[in-house]
Image (cartoon, rainbow, N blue to C red):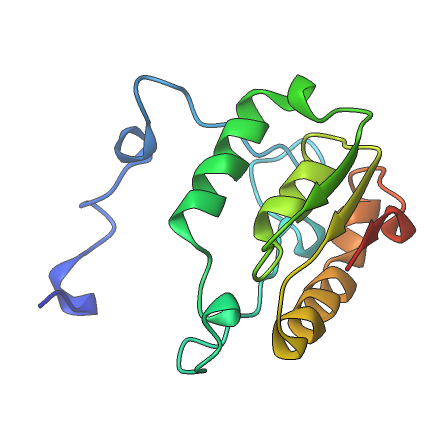
Length: 139
Protein backbone atom coordinates (compact mmCIF):
# COMPACT_ATOMS: atom_id res chain seq x y z
CA UNK A 1 0.00 0.00 0.00
CA UNK A 2 1.15 3.51 -0.84
CA UNK A 3 0.83 6.29 1.71
CA UNK A 4 1.96 9.93 1.96
CA UNK A 5 5.23 8.91 3.58
CA UNK A 6 6.20 6.86 0.54
CA UNK A 7 6.47 9.90 -1.75
CA UNK A 8 8.34 13.15 -1.49
CA UNK A 9 8.65 16.16 -3.80
CA UNK A 10 11.74 14.66 -5.46
CA UNK A 11 9.86 11.54 -6.55
CA UNK A 12 7.70 13.34 -9.12
CA UNK A 13 8.64 15.93 -11.72
CA UNK A 14 7.09 17.48 -14.82
CA UNK A 15 8.45 14.68 -17.01
CA UNK A 16 6.40 12.14 -15.06
CA UNK A 17 3.27 13.82 -16.40
CA UNK A 18 4.14 13.49 -20.10
CA UNK A 19 1.87 11.24 -22.14
CA UNK A 20 3.42 9.83 -25.30
CA UNK A 21 5.90 12.69 -25.48
CA UNK A 22 3.29 15.47 -25.27
CA UNK A 23 4.39 18.49 -23.31
CA UNK A 24 2.02 19.57 -20.57
CA UNK A 25 0.45 23.04 -20.97
CA UNK A 26 2.28 25.60 -18.88
CA UNK A 27 0.35 27.63 -16.32
CA UNK A 28 0.68 31.33 -16.92
CA UNK A 29 -1.00 33.66 -14.50
CA UNK A 30 -0.31 37.38 -14.24
CA UNK A 31 3.15 36.89 -15.72
CA UNK A 32 4.19 34.39 -13.04
CA UNK A 33 4.18 30.64 -12.69
CA UNK A 34 2.10 30.80 -9.49
CA UNK A 35 -1.53 29.76 -9.64
CA UNK A 36 -4.21 32.14 -8.39
CA UNK A 37 -7.60 31.15 -7.01
CA UNK A 38 -9.17 31.69 -10.44
CA UNK A 39 -6.72 29.23 -12.04
CA UNK A 40 -8.03 26.28 -10.04
CA UNK A 41 -10.81 24.11 -11.43
CA UNK A 42 -12.81 22.78 -8.48
CA UNK A 43 -14.65 19.46 -8.78
CA UNK A 44 -16.71 18.03 -5.93
CA UNK A 45 -17.00 14.25 -5.75
CA UNK A 46 -18.61 11.90 -3.24
CA UNK A 47 -16.26 8.90 -3.19
CA UNK A 48 -18.37 6.98 -0.65
CA UNK A 49 -21.76 7.69 -2.22
CA UNK A 50 -23.65 4.80 -3.83
CA UNK A 51 -24.36 6.88 -6.96
CA UNK A 52 -21.44 6.02 -9.26
CA UNK A 53 -21.82 9.25 -11.27
CA UNK A 54 -20.60 11.42 -8.40
CA UNK A 55 -17.97 9.03 -7.03
CA UNK A 56 -14.95 10.29 -8.97
CA UNK A 57 -13.57 11.82 -12.13
CA UNK A 58 -13.76 8.84 -14.46
CA UNK A 59 -10.62 7.89 -16.37
CA UNK A 60 -12.38 8.09 -19.75
CA UNK A 61 -13.56 11.63 -18.93
CA UNK A 62 -10.05 12.66 -17.87
CA UNK A 63 -8.63 11.22 -21.11
CA UNK A 64 -11.22 13.05 -23.21
CA UNK A 65 -10.54 16.28 -21.31
CA UNK A 66 -6.81 15.91 -22.00
CA UNK A 67 -7.55 15.24 -25.67
CA UNK A 68 -9.67 18.42 -25.83
CA UNK A 69 -6.88 20.44 -24.23
CA UNK A 70 -4.52 19.40 -27.01
CA UNK A 71 -7.17 19.42 -29.77
CA UNK A 72 -9.48 22.34 -28.96
CA UNK A 73 -10.56 22.64 -32.60
CA UNK A 74 -12.80 19.60 -32.06
CA UNK A 75 -15.29 21.63 -29.99
CA UNK A 76 -14.26 25.28 -30.39
CA UNK A 77 -17.26 27.46 -31.28
CA UNK A 78 -19.62 24.44 -31.25
CA UNK A 79 -22.59 23.59 -29.06
CA UNK A 80 -21.68 20.54 -26.98
CA UNK A 81 -23.94 18.10 -25.11
CA UNK A 82 -22.16 15.75 -22.73
CA UNK A 83 -24.18 12.61 -21.93
CA UNK A 84 -23.24 10.95 -18.65
CA UNK A 85 -21.23 13.96 -17.51
CA UNK A 86 -20.76 12.67 -13.96
CA UNK A 87 -19.06 15.43 -11.97
CA UNK A 88 -18.72 17.70 -15.03
CA UNK A 89 -14.94 17.77 -15.40
CA UNK A 90 -14.86 17.07 -19.14
CA UNK A 91 -17.65 19.54 -19.92
CA UNK A 92 -15.94 22.30 -17.93
CA UNK A 93 -12.70 21.68 -19.83
CA UNK A 94 -14.61 21.78 -23.14
CA UNK A 95 -16.01 25.18 -22.17
CA UNK A 96 -13.11 26.80 -20.35
CA UNK A 97 -10.07 25.48 -22.20
CA UNK A 98 -11.31 24.33 -25.61
CA UNK A 99 -13.78 27.25 -25.97
CA UNK A 100 -16.95 25.43 -26.94
CA UNK A 101 -19.75 27.89 -27.77
CA UNK A 102 -21.98 26.24 -25.16
CA UNK A 103 -21.88 23.09 -23.06
CA UNK A 104 -24.91 21.27 -21.66
CA UNK A 105 -24.09 18.40 -19.31
CA UNK A 106 -26.53 15.63 -18.42
CA UNK A 107 -26.60 12.56 -16.24
CA UNK A 108 -29.17 10.12 -14.94
CA UNK A 109 -29.75 10.65 -11.21
CA UNK A 110 -30.90 13.69 -9.31
CA UNK A 111 -27.83 13.51 -7.05
CA UNK A 112 -25.60 13.65 -10.11
CA UNK A 113 -27.51 16.57 -11.63
CA UNK A 114 -27.43 18.49 -8.34
CA UNK A 115 -23.67 17.95 -8.12
CA UNK A 116 -23.22 19.05 -11.74
CA UNK A 117 -25.05 22.30 -10.97
CA UNK A 118 -22.88 22.75 -7.87
CA UNK A 119 -19.64 22.21 -9.83
CA UNK A 120 -20.70 24.63 -12.56
CA UNK A 121 -21.62 27.25 -9.95
CA UNK A 122 -18.36 26.65 -8.06
CA UNK A 123 -16.36 27.32 -11.23
CA UNK A 124 -18.04 30.53 -12.41
CA UNK A 125 -14.92 32.61 -11.70
CA UNK A 126 -12.74 30.00 -13.40
CA UNK A 127 -14.96 30.23 -16.51
CA UNK A 128 -15.07 34.04 -16.49
CA UNK A 129 -11.28 34.08 -16.16
CA UNK A 130 -11.20 32.22 -19.46
CA UNK A 131 -13.64 34.60 -21.18
CA UNK A 132 -16.54 32.14 -20.96
CA UNK A 133 -19.99 33.39 -19.99
CA UNK A 134 -21.09 31.07 -17.15
CA UNK A 135 -24.63 31.04 -18.60
CA UNK A 136 -23.36 29.05 -21.58
CA UNK A 137 -22.45 26.09 -19.33
CA UNK A 138 -25.53 24.30 -18.01
CA UNK A 139 -26.79 21.04 -16.56
